[in-house]
Length: 292
Length: 316
Image (cartoon, rainbow over all chains, first blue to last red; front, side, top):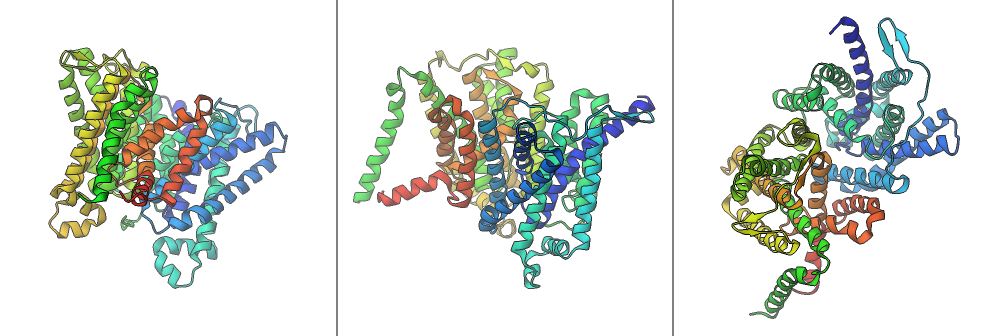
């Protein structure tokens, strides 16, 4: 493998990893604070992307407005999920909460397939044009957008979590929900805020990702599995871990796919099981994990 | 005998007669019996998952992999190595059990969604490995698997399969029920409710978690092996994450932690698309999603809770 190919693979891997990171950050934000592993993250985004698709192609709404609307729609979906579903079953087992999100994911997939049929559609990219050459590396414009979006999202989430009152409240809930309530933190509204932000991220992520694939009801499935592995690799505890985990998985996967195409799908999955067994705290998690 | 006891006996007898009558009633429409056969196979696999999740408190998002291993092992043994079909099925069950041991080990260290992710990863990679192997037909799938043969008796008609599966289904469910009522079964449930309490009472938590995983895997393997000889076609895509989630959904809708739940869930899952009709296939996915949400939020024991309510209402 020459150095040029290596560089190209790595950078392309980074852009793939940015996709996993974008999805993963939303999942981990919700997981960390509300203790729900959101299996519907990908499909929430998928459904919003369908709506966005028809806004762009049929209603000719400007792309930037659609992007904002998609984020807003995600936030609304998140609010509704938290207010009308999660709140009433919060005290149940983690299994019930996982199953609830699995049910949601099926619901979104079924709705999308039922309303819009399953034939793959091409979604226009946010920026089109020839790929950009930076030294030996060739990069598609949309890929650069995704990479930048992942970085900006990470920055915003970091500022939110560490520089705002609500962010501090969310972090305190993730440490000890009971103590947070005792100290007067309004946990229900923080939960709603976190669900809104997490699902808004789902909408944004899906819309930016979809031009690279094609729009069909199942297009987020594999990406979500990868996002989960990114979270595990990053330690399940932090948005930072999810972001870096996503990037690492993207790069390693791309390199493995080039050298050993036969094992490209399974490789990361096996790695993740080993990571879970040998160091369940992941790369950036604290050793003292919450036990479930 | 008390009046309610008599009534109960009568209802049970009616149910048994009803179950036995089905192939005769649908004699001219054997496809319906065929769907019931599939539902029974799913019910068997789901019973394994139910044992694991409902009674063992362990999550598995890779349960379809056990079915795949059972099915492929049995089918390959019969087709390539010309092994006796009964032995091949036994080998399929054993193979799945062995893999259950492998997947079970993570469960000793992981719980909650850590385990969910681990089983999801292992389950998806099994489908991927099968896709790469030559002996399993790879991406083309395994076609022309011979039909089920018992001694000299070939089960070609749907009705004969139906009666055979009813026997297997009842046997599996009885074994699971008796296991759960035995000392080991109580230990498994104790581990689910509180690991610490269980180990304080002298239950070997690690051993029972592994036993639960192996048992559940064996049941799924049996279902997979029978599936192979019924459908005569296996493809790795059919045993991916999506099917694992389907099995999970069946057990949730039917009712986790109940013995009859898996039958109700599998019947609901297989029959609903038929009732709705072919063109509305995806509407049934919507209904499945809503049913899962509904059963988690309002009916924690799923459809079997409805059955229990009807029973109390009728004072059975």
